[in-house]
Image (cartoon, rainbow, N blue to C red; front, side, top):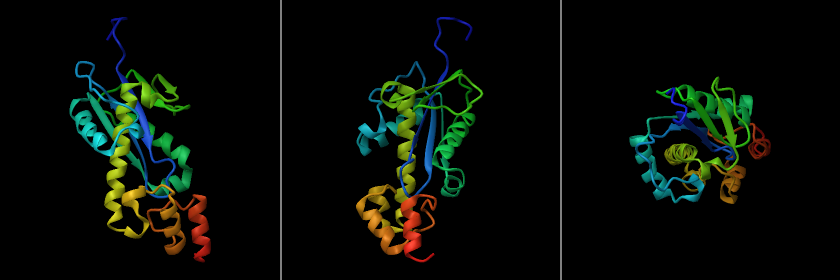
Length: 197
């Protein structure tokens, strides 16, 4: 570790689900193994669902350490989505089985990790560890929303994953929100008001 030419042990951090009206925000931290590079890593949004699922298993198998955190709707409603995301990032890194020497975050701001950290805009497409984190965050959240679709099929969570599609918005207006919705988000508040709740 004292070799100045050695690369620091680096954790990549990314989230999935800041924009949806329903469901948690999912945050992952990954420390890749430099001796076991993974081909095909990219921003999760640029990969097919099938490719993400395949890479999810490879990352979990080959990474030196990884951790996935989901911040639930009640916390999002209480502290807002930005703060919930930053909290998730802190928890994801703190829960790693290996302490990183450097944390790389996709985006334009880092929470206080108590460790050296850099925010990189577009980092999920340029930094392998962030790409891996984006895949773990996205797949874990999608799996969660698919399960929840069985409880709340009227909202189409199997298709929209909680994002504000036209079908989701229409269902929200017709049925009102369910416990999975983020009640602090304006479209959900409007649906509540229209239902007189």
